[in-house]
Length: 192
Image (cartoon, rainbow, N blue to C red; front, side, top):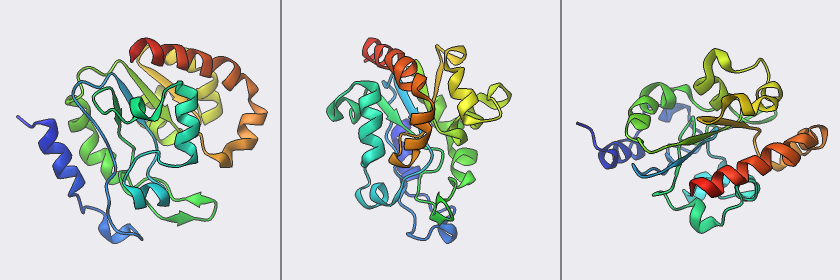
């Protein structure tokens, strides 16, 4: 029987896709079997790769605002698990970071999720997480999936990426912060 501590140790030592990682492997994740909230994002950026702390950037600041929680709560792994689709920084592409490496989810996610029995709500941040967790229930676009966020509750809540690069998306979709974020704060407050 695999323990979560042993599995996390194995993941943090993972070198499976080392040859594809421009900054080398540095798996970044947090989890505890007592966590009630699970946040699944894409993959660490360069700042998170450097610090080893998930969501340690402007995107994380906005995400914590959406949740209505302080950093102390956000980083309390006994309450909040943070497991990205790709655990290491994937490198730069033409319009931002490359997609998360697929090896992480394929090799590690089922094992990890099986050891998180108390998760009551999973936040799916971005299209990669939404497609992986929702499968055919995901809509063709991130916007369409996020627009129908209420249909995925109580287990999942799809979110756009909170990156400052998404300012245009937030301006075009004011309903998100007016409606969905209010519910997200309420759910997070009840859960934690």
